[in-house]
Length: 108
Image 1 (cartoon, one colour):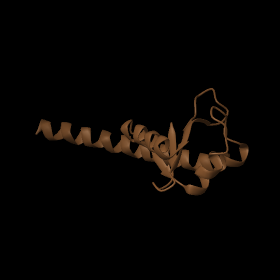
Image 2 (cartoon, rainbow, N blue to C red):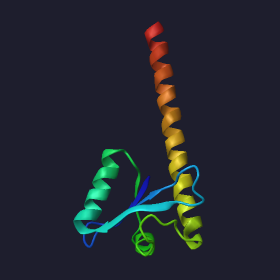
Image 3 (tube, helix red, strand yellow):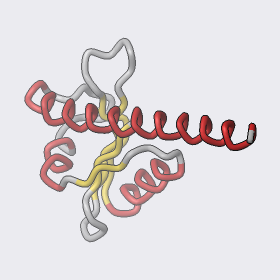
Image 4 (cartoon, helix red, strand yellow):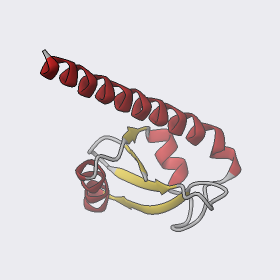
């Protein structure tokens, strides 16, 4: 799940999910105000990336709940997902390197 949010005043949030069998990401949650804050808090609690983009959120708010994003937004969402995947891969690689270094230190 990926969450897109905008700053707290007039806050809106969208949660997207992209399953293996989906042809495009789906809007799985969206809301304004307190609902938006809950979406963002839940995402952060589960360590889900939160991307802030007022323009993209405004466009995605027009998509029905449980509907796939429109083709016009594929590129924008794909770029965000690719960036997230790179960050996650770098983090995993860094964690593996740290574990390896710890093992070496323990052998000394």
